[in-house]
Image 1 (cartoon, helix red, strand yellow):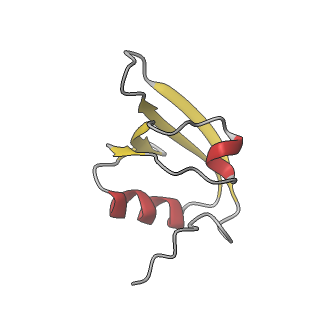
Image 2 (tube, helix red, strand yellow; image 1 turned 90 degrees about the vertical axis):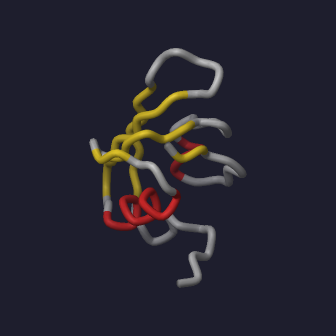
Length: 79
């Protein structure tokens, strides 16, 4: 999975996702690297489904969130 950190205002924060959340899948596709997560998010538009866990929890959480993909990747990317 990929751990969420340094949340800024945007879709993740609006969906009430918290720092530390570990994304295990995006739209049913397993996520194991940051690059994989970025690719899936970039390819997605509209409503997506994240599933994951928090480090101290035993439950799997699902978060629906809406991406417009004009600003869903606000970390710069660079490649």
